[in-house]
Amino acid sequence: MINFKNLKVVVTLFGLAYSCSLFAQDNWKHTENDRKVAVDVDSISKGGYTLIWINKDKDFSAPLKERLVAAYFTNYPKLAKKYNKKTIKKVSFVIDPDYKGVAATAGGIVRYSPAWFAKNPGDIDVVTHEVMHIVQAYPDGAGPWWITEGIADFVRFDDGIDNAGANWKLPEYNEKQKYTDSYRITARFLYWINLHIKKDFVKKLDAAMRSKSYSDAFWKVETGKTIDELWADYSQNPTL
Image (cartoon, rainbow, N blue to C red; front, side, top):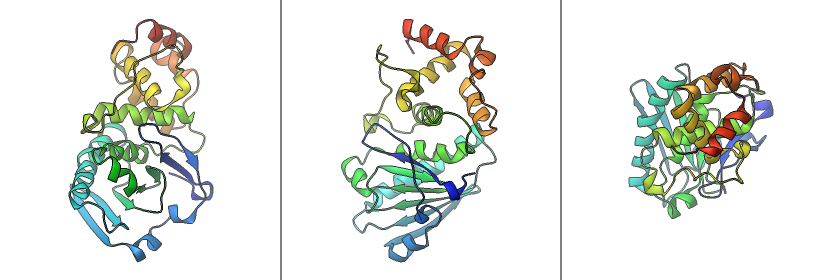
């Protein structure tokens, strides 16, 4: 799990793009201060999983709350079963008007911007991306950040509930791209490997990151080719 002395926060920013940042802010450890000013605090449990809902925005849509809660209970247990059965069973969602990104995850807390949802009410699969970060639970030094974010967007593409409703999709390949570009570009490359080279490759990559056994040799061990060789093949025939 995350060491909060060197707090790692995964942040969703700028619409369809995402980026990561590091923070050392105490409010990522706890939600006590959020609860004090919340207009709605709810605890929902189902099938062994719990979601703590903390809303600090009086104008947040009730139907949208229902969709975000439903997205959690649809996808978090599914992703836990598929990738990491030892993941935590209780997660907190905080609707935070003071947060200026789109969404950010630290430990078991996901902070969402109501301003983003006001403009993009169909983007419920932000939940899918963010809760995958909880499932990942990579230790410090697990591997490159672009793999972390590439896997999360791979999962959003593979298990998303309504990506079409947010006009969210993987970009077509172009020669300016690099596999280290992360997010959707890396996700598309990973999907291509899963589809054409080795089924369950991403599950093995995720497990290697979580066990801190990942190295550059991983790609050749699992596929018979280096990552650069795989990217060269992908660039020649990137069809999904």
